[in-house]
Structures are given as structure tokens and as C-alpha cells.
Length: 318
Image (tube, rainbow, N blue to C red; front, side, top):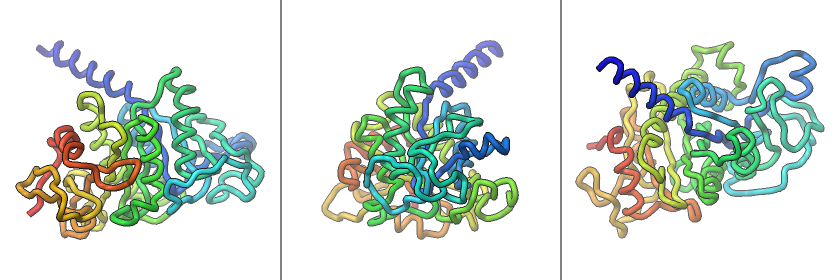
């Protein structure tokens, strides 16, 4: 029995490691290029949240390649442009003016920037980096975020985090956008120089929550999500929620609509809005199912598919 348990554990670990993930955001992630080589600096991207997320995914056994905008591109929605040579330094001066349109960390080529919009970074990760690092195959999933600040309601229509997740879904790659209420846009160095700061602690907590969420979703049967459908996940403030175990996930919708009947997991034909749940007392994270082409709420049939996959971690609110 002990041997069989060990075999089952090994198979579970093996199954997880085949999950190939492109990680992106809209707050910016950057890599030193010739500067890293000259000064022998082992550094990566600039923003603490994306660095913590990459660390957490790798520690959990996922096969990750990171592809993010060179600078903060918050609020750019689904804007797109051809990447260009940098006319000013990368965020936090982490790569110099004149750096190429796309680049990577010289000590870790899995850490990549794209000098364009979040959509372009996601596209570069899917179409260019994934085949290179995943032996010619596509990613299994695209993680966008965690964003600095929540993306709720109307903000979804303009969010670069949502834009990147939508791009992935429209390219046939299941995806989710993650955002957290706590934290500022600070350098990745904060994770080590000030690990007890609110920014660092929030980045670590949100990253661990994303891993726990993905562990459940990616363990479900294929397809992971319906075609053209993505998820918007929002985490509340970590001020009173200081441990991953404090959080509970709630199935929500982005926009209130009394004329539409939603899936009915808690005895109510109308799901609560993500905005109303995030504003509640308690450690409730929201999961909304949306159509990547419109960024509006998905129908009840698609909500039901997601409910079935995430039922073990979803809760009802009073």
C-alpha cells in the first residue's frame, strides 16, 4: 500500500510538471541585458508581484516562461503595437535606453520583456517563447498577473491584465487574470530587502493563492476552460487576511444583470457581483467567468462548467 501511495504521488507530481505556463502582466516585468553580464547581476523583472508569482509557480513544479511588458502598461486594455527599441530605460532603470524591442535575462532566458502592450507580451509568450521552451508545443495555460490593484466592474474593459488573458483565450489557450487589492508597484528587490513589508507579504500571499487555484483548475478534465472563455480572479486586501488559509473563493459575475439567469450554486439565480463581494468583510476572493471577445459575463452554461471544475474550493456567502 505504501508503494502504491508513493507511485500515485509520483504520478501526481509528474502530471503537474507537464503544465506549461506563460506568465504575463500589465505592470511591467523587465530583465537586465548587457548590464547583467557586465556586473554579473543575477536579476530578473522589476515588479515584486510578478517575481513572487514566477517563484511560486516554479516552486510548485510548473514549467514557466515569463513574458511581460518592459514598462507599466496598466489601463491599456487590448491595445496592440509592434514592439520597438526602448527610447527610455526600462521600469526601475533595469535595462538601458536602446535595448532591443524584446529581450531576456542573460542568466535566465525564461525571463523576457516585450516593449509593447500586455496583449503583445502575451502573444510573444504564446507564439514565440512557448515553442522555444516547451519543445515546440503550446502553453497549457496563461497566467496574467497578479495585478497591482483589483480589476472590478468597468475596469475590466480597460485592464491590460484582462487584455492579456483575453488574447490568450482568443488564441485558444485557456487563461485567467489575477488581481490583488493590497500592494504598490515596487521593485522585485523589495521581496528580499523588506520581506515583512505590506507589499512583499501581499505579493507572496497572492502568488500562493494563484498556485492553489491553478492546482485545482488544471487538475480538472480537458478542456480546462470552454473555448473563448477566461476567468477574472480578484483577491481582497491582506490587511486582515494574512494567511492563504484565510481566503475563500466565491463564484461571481462582473456586471449586475437582473434580466439574466446565472448558474445557481447557492440557491440564487443571480450571482453576486465581484465588486460587492470584494467590499464585504471577510477574506473572499472572487472568480468571474467572462467572454474574451467582449469582456462581458459568460452565460450560465459556461459558468456551470467552471463551477463544476472549481466546486471543491468555492463557497457561498450569506
